[in-house]
Length: 101
Image 1 (cartoon, rainbow, N blue to C red):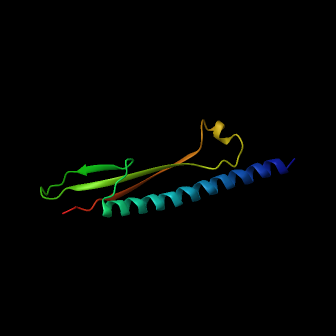
Image 2 (tube, one colour):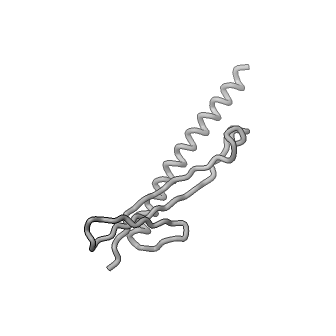
Image 3 (cartoon, rainbow, N blue to C red):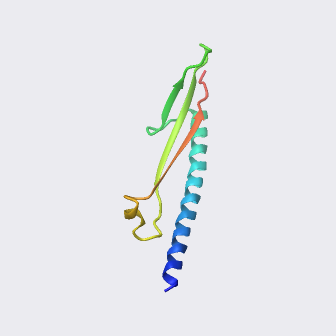
């Protein structure tokens, strides 16, 4: 009688641990990609560029926004249907773009 709740608690803990690890890993990866792309000015179709007005009329600031979405592994059966869909991790990386002379 005690084994089933303990197994469920263990699977929930493993699900939370893996979700946090994957999100942190993806965040570091996406932030690195945003920095690399902003320096090299090699953009992909999924990237967004935001123009920011500055008081200096000779300088324009541009922000590069990189988004990535990934499905999470499901360790607890029925958890995705209980939460209303599939489990996804979505992270965003932001970097200031270099001015091309």
